[in-house]
Image (cartoon, rainbow, N blue to C red; front, side, top):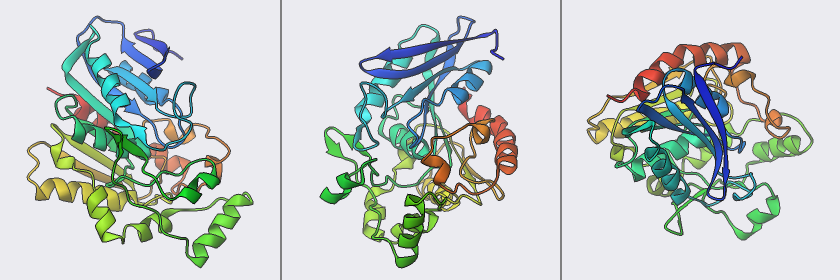
Length: 303
């Protein structure tokens, strides 16, 4: 059932595809840019829940929609800079209270974006994110033949990234199973790739540049990638560099990769994603999502 106090508007224009959810009251309200992960879908659920709590929330797609890149390959960070400035210019938004929320690859993006634009972003919440920028994985495997590419670009140049390693014999067997329709986990592939010290150092997100609080949420049973490891690295870097704002990593031991806004674990996914092992289970993921939601709202409530 739609909340009568919330207005949702589809946004489709050459420079933006998404959904704007806002309270009916005039504001000014704090605002949140909501970015999704590698499914490419607009994360409307989280935006709607945030609007019900008094935020103006703009959920955007950044690939896989008409007018946008086909794949998550060298997505220009400038796209999001424009979205943030558009959000800041809306009359119902308090331009000094804008945050970014993202999940999975969107969590990686949220941290990258906030670190690149401390003048625009004042807080970050990242569900099951990465601590580094990763190699792009195009939908057409033939595109991989030309060599690995970054998922993101800035100023026309690829953002440094960690490449995936050639698969081990066990991982090749997993991949063959994936092609034949058997659900697989890619966690071990990401863990092996994190052993590339030089690439990891170059691709580590400069989270210490973020101009506000940082909340990281991870799942101890995450089977897609080691979000608990990544969360620990993010907070360790903030600690080591004396980050002046609150920063916290909460790991839910029984949750998997579908930890997110309440209801995320129950959302249907595309056929390809249904063949990926996410870890955890719907009950544990939903319990963790609901338990973490008050913390999410606290970190997004910029004074």
